[in-house]
Amino acid sequence: MPKFVVEREIPSIGQVSTEELQAIARKSREVLNAMGTSIQWVESYVTGDKIYCVYIAENEQQILDHAAQGGFPANRICQIKTTIDPTTAE
Image (cartoon, rainbow, N blue to C red; front, side, top):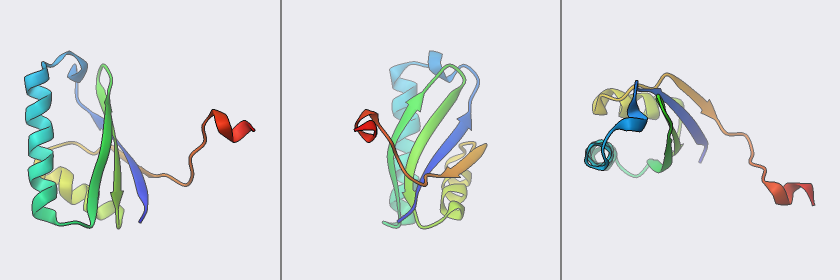
């Protein structure tokens, strides 16, 4: 299944408490559970004003549906074509 990176613009998200991040994660998980097994949240990276989330999903529409149902922004969605890391140079 395709893998995607989702950019979510959320002002000052990097300054929220652990409890607030837990509540966001809980809501995301609830929506995903209701959507079924064809979409999976892998992990997210929280920066100052954005969250970058990695998802495995059948298509971009599933990610948009998840965002709408959870009340999360999905400002940009990019399908990952391949990955590289330091061992790619070997």
